[in-house]
Length: 99
Image 1 (tube, rainbow, N blue to C red):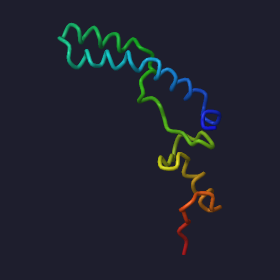
Image 2 (image 1 turned 135 degrees about the vertical axis):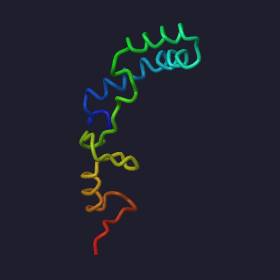
Image 3 (image 1 turned 45 degrees about the vertical axis):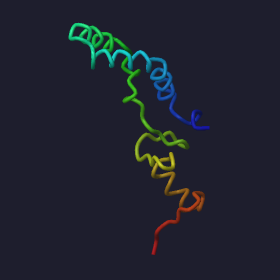
Image 4 (image 1 turned 30 degrees about the vertical axis):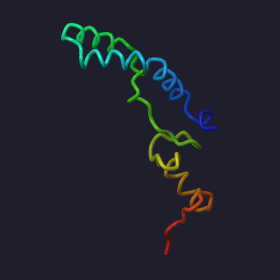
């Protein structure tokens, strides 16, 4: 269900990150521990990889709406959906604090 409601761009990014994860890790290890000439070469190769292959570019999105901001990690939904669902009693153990 989550993949259908996510933005297609985000799904493509996730696939790209998975495809290049091993290669990125190997190059980063060389950059950290190799001699300066090797490290420079590895850094050049790392920069040549696609920009979206970097896992930092992935973004958490609401499973229901795909909204990228206001994401509540514990529930996997945005603040707006969380508030709506909590008010309707759809999230077990969560009560709206109103007095």
